[in-house]
Amino acid sequence: MIAIRNRVLLVLGALAVAAVLTLPLLTHAPNRLLSGRPIAALDLAGPWGPLVLAAAALLLAGALVPPRRPSLTMQLLLGIGIAIGLVWLAGVQAELLAAGARPSARTSFGSGFWLLVLAALLAAADAARRLDLGPLARLGVALLLAVPIAALIAGGAVDQLSLMKEYVQQHGVFGPQVLRHLLLVGLALVPTLLIGVPLGIAAHRSAAARGPIFSILGIIQTIPSIALFGLLIAPLSALSSALPWLGVSGIGITPAVIALCLYSLLPIARNTAAGLGQVEAGVIDAARGIGMTRRQIFREVEVPLALPVFLSGLRITLIQAIGLAAVAALIGAGGLGAVMFQGLFANALDLVLLGALPIILMAVTVDAVFRILVAALQGRTA
Image (cartoon, rainbow, N blue to C red):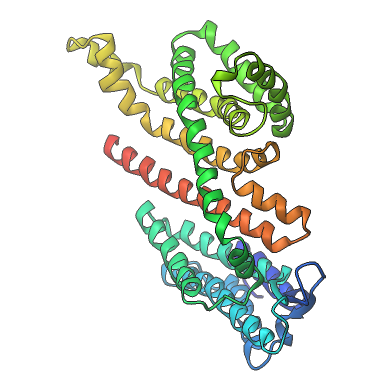
């Protein structure tokens, strides 16, 4: 009887094989508006189709291998290699399809491509988890994936893909929209910290204040983002009419920043209170016993010990704000959401991806950086 040693890899490998056999790896269309002709992996010229199937089968076969360190390392490298190889292969096939085709022709990633890449990256993530890699090692793994893909993009290996053609067309506005997106998040972060941290401290120190603070902030979290943006338009427009010198308006960056700040208050306040609450009473008593004042205890004992939990809350806040800032484009705030909605309105899915992928990259980068910081601080305070 065949023994299954890794059920996660069994599922991922089966998903990868099914994607190769049943779904298109790429699509090719005369222009961005028409549906593309599906191109399955096995329809690719030369040895590429069987090689893609073999890579998917290797993931599936890995479920039968005992999860020891050498095999897990191979699983990690295989997952990363499949993802990089698929990007390169898509670029090669796009160049072949572009030969003799009109300039308006588009070669896009198919559903099979995305499922195969997802299965490969999840397999790599599973291996990294089982290997119990530290934060810096995880960062190295991320660079092992990101650097080759960045090199493929910089070297022009994927220029004929529809996604890159959209980037060329949007080049003049793409950079400013990225900066606008970061500006929205940064402007919302400042008032969030100025309001959320004191609220968290108050919730920690006063049981009577804790309930109302978290209840109100929790209610704000339940309001849909679009509804909250809409609710802010009328009062801000009235304020703009009454006090035009303030420079605020009912649409644009002001309601976006206010809404992002309101959504961000709960994780900041909750993690501030949780971080201060997990400081052991014995540590505070010891600090008081050596003559420290209450202010010194807070600054030199409680804050350093609470910092890892607070940074975890800040990580959640930033990731949430990066995602919600895309919706702010609906009220004229700009950012990468404007690129996404432009693609939706024009039925150009690759333009939607052009706006969505940087948002995902920002969120993943923030997550990785803050995890490293939290792990470093926990190591120092251990």
